[in-house]
Each structure stands twice: as structure tokens, then as C-alpha cells.
Length: 255
Image 1: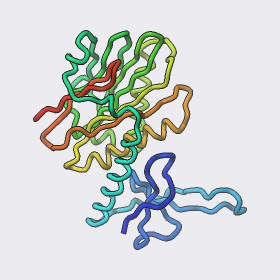
Image 2: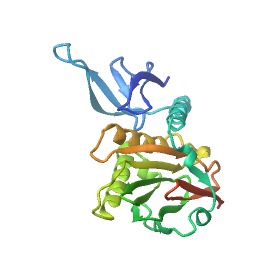
Image 3: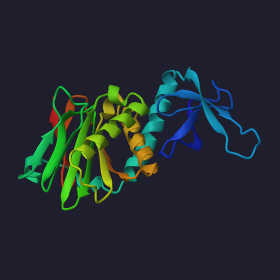
Image 4: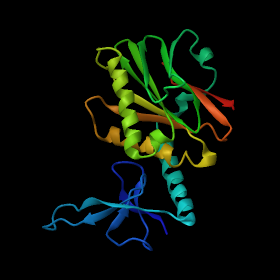
């Protein structure tokens, strides 16, 4: 039976997994990509054990798949509940909230390419989110604001590395928008998913974990995951979302 261990995974809200019925005692399962690792003790017994990735991947059966979703649901809920700026994610019409803002939107046929803008009154965003996920970011630059957005499909979130690569593309695009140095940490928001088909518990979890890992790495430019929401609760719904000076605005639409 698939279950979580007590060992944290790479500074995230998730734990390494195990299945005592199918794996050896010295094997652990990556909670995001289901790769199997062997725990190798140190040679002299004084250093911490290391993990060696094998060529095998854990294949959950029907009951394990339900346990896998429940593990992600619990960890994701705890991770989102702890974020400080969830209250800055509000439903509403972006044009009403940011009536004079200049908007930068992700292009419909090139959504995986991030967009970024800088100014005293700018927004960045995307449409059609759900079950896709939007990563949005903002950071002060003197008396101006850098904002950015990247639209992630299921393929863009299919592994933890791909989710991390998408985050890096967003941050790189934002850094290219002007040579001015940031005057504060980058604030990250993740919006989207669909609770009905499980994407909020697996692919969405990879996005949150990638942001947590980036934050824990303490880069030169601090990156803080500060808000997340899964507003689209039905398969037939999607979300349009923007980020601006006061926070994130989204509207739910019916397909």
C-alpha cells in the first residue's frame, strides 16, 4: 500500500513515499515523478545517507492511485493554507480592478512562452486556465513594478523538472524586460487546475513544489511563493487571470 514516510522531500511540503508491500526497506519513491531511489548508507557511518536513483518507476494500481491523490491533496492543502497572500487573489473583472493598466497577455498559440512587462501601472496575464495552471510573478523595481505570467499545460507540469524549468523561463523573461535591479523579492502566485480530474493534486503539486524548492535555494534574487488558488472546480470551466500592483484578479468562465 502506497504511503508517505516521515522524510521531507527537498524542502517541500511533501514527503518521500514508500510501499512496504512492493519495495525493499531501503527504497523510497519520489512523490512527484514516482521514480524509485535506493538509500545508500555512508561508508564510515558518520555522514548522512545518500539517495541513488534507479531505472525503475513505481506503477500504482487502482487503490494506490487513490492513495497517491489523497497524499497530494493533503500536502497541497497544507502548502496553500500556509501562504501569506492568498487573500490578494480575488475574483473580479480585471478591467474594473486595473482600469488604466497596460496589459501584457500570453498569446493563445504560444502559451508556454512567458510574458513580462514593467511600469508604474501594468498587468500580465493569460486566459483559458483550467485544467492548465498559470504562474504569475511581480517584483518592485524602484517606483515601478515588474510583472510576468506563464501558462502551463499538463505537459509542462508532467515532471517536477519541467515545472521548475517553466518557472525559470518566467523569471528569465522578467529579468530581460529591463536592466534595472529588483528592489524586493519576487512574489509568485499559482492559479488554475481542476479538482474534478485530479490535476490540482498532481500537476499542480509539482508547480507548488518547484516554487518551494526555488525559494529554499536562496538565490541571489529571492523568490517567495506567496499565494495559490484552484478556482476552477469543474471540467467545463476555465479562468482568465492577471497580476498587477494590488494582487491577482481572476474570472471564471464556462466553456
